[in-house]
Amino acid sequence: MIMSRRLHIAVIGAGAWGTALACAMAATGADVTLWMRNPVPPGTRTLPRLPEIPLPDTVTITGDFPHTADVVLLVTPVQTARDVSTRLQSVLDPAVPVVTCCKGLEQATALLPLDVLAQTMPNRPTGVLSGPNFAIEIAKGLPAAATLACADLALAQTLTALLNTSSFRLYASDDATGVQLAGAAKNVIAIGAGITIGAGLGENARAALITRAVAEIGRLAEAIGGRASTLAGLAGMGDLILTCTGRGSRNYSVGLELGEGRPLADILASRTTVAEGVLTAPAMLALARKHNVRVPIIETVTRLLNEGVSIEEARHLLLDRPPTRE
Image (tube, rainbow, N blue to C red):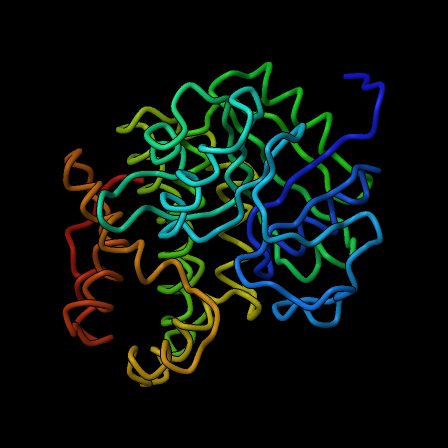
């Protein structure tokens, strides 16, 4: 797509991921507007979530929602996406595409992010960006890749062409449902993987958990209109590998501490960042039950988080089931 003027990309949310995406989008040569809820002093070029990364000169920090842009990236937590997108809808030109970059399910409704946007931003072109991406590495410009999915493949291809950079490679997909589900479920699985290692159950156990998680997420994806094959890509297996093995993963680190015996309430109270998997787990289980899909790993992690099931009990819940075909 050839443009006769500089591209304008608006990033809504200045947490670590929003800050990182603002840095990445500046590499496209675009003018980038980074919206944040809490104002900062004029001239500020570093933000609290990534204090070691100075913002590029082409990134402007603002407390005002954009009225127009070429693309808007919505980078708020899933649980606040409804409120923020409702307010954004009231001022944003209706033709501007909005790409959600959050991962999870809305806790109260078990809705995926684009289903929330369908209610708050009806008839607007939308998409989802998801993949194996730690914010700090994206902000530093280290090599990475992600999937950008829209129900309309042509829109996904247009957006990937606009947002792709030499260090942040984007792949287009028309399986927005599968990409969203994979991004939400991997947070839950990452907690389970962390518990496995924190409790000393071994690398074999973690590898088995990750692999079998792909199978159950694939079953659920197909049940809600996505494709199991999406789980073989960046938004599926790629993101699972990263978040289930990297200590930079918030959800994995929560699992590690749980596995070591620290109470969940104490872990969450000591953190300033959001571990979406804690809130997503019960919503994901509710979604699976609604569609009569077996998700033993997601169910077991949910019970560990919310029902006081011990790690030893969880081990038996998963391993003492009758053998099945792979």
